[in-house]
Image (tube, rainbow, N blue to C red; front, top):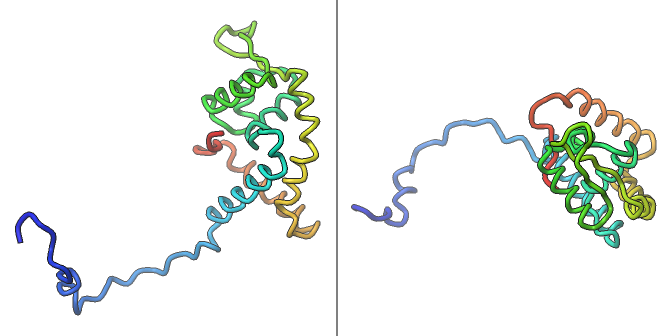
Length: 175
């Protein structure tokens, strides 16, 4: 048959009697660290969105606001490093926060290429208002663990993050 698809059943007929090569069984999803981490992240984001819906702030933006509150003033590169984001994504998130008047951005005195950022009064007030709701989302993310398991789980995550912080591909997904 030229220029067309094989007739129905032709592939099955041509493979009749052949054995598929023996392969290793796939690693079950529910045992894969990457899959479980992605699912846990999805669960946390859903909880965060539920608890913090009235504030219309993403978990990533909340991290930026928190990092700025800790530093007072910081350039975008420093903030990107603080929350493990690439600079471009950080800049976009900061622009969105600036458009809502939660962050001020201005050319840095020490480097005209850099943007110095700081929380506005509205940003400080927002962070204060949403702290309890955000904390609740974080606590509910691990609520099914007992206190000792929760502490151990967080310690294990911190250990992995600390060990891999210099590795390639450790930046977060876009906001």
